[in-house]
Image (cartoon, rainbow, N blue to C red):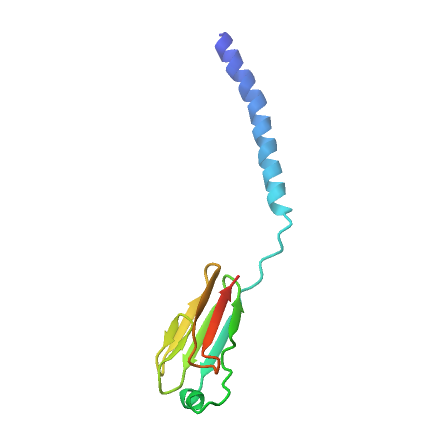
Length: 126
């Protein structure tokens, strides 16, 4: 019988402690200092007809900057209306096609860029 009483005492003390812990955890979860999540941003870029020809002629082409910054969850859509395939960082976009990328983790993607006069771009996802 002593064993039964001991279990009963443990349960009577244990249940209130568990309830208190659950309440404290729920309050802590709702009162955090983290800012509310921002909505994802979508960036749409069109490579127009004649872009490659303009780059070949040495004209200033600034469709893509040398550094593009995104946040995790953001989306990049590139549509290539030019007559040739273009490379933008790690992405290849064939003539007449489009790509749709959602950034799911932090990363840095350096690479060539055939659609700007610098010839390179870095895509930074923070």
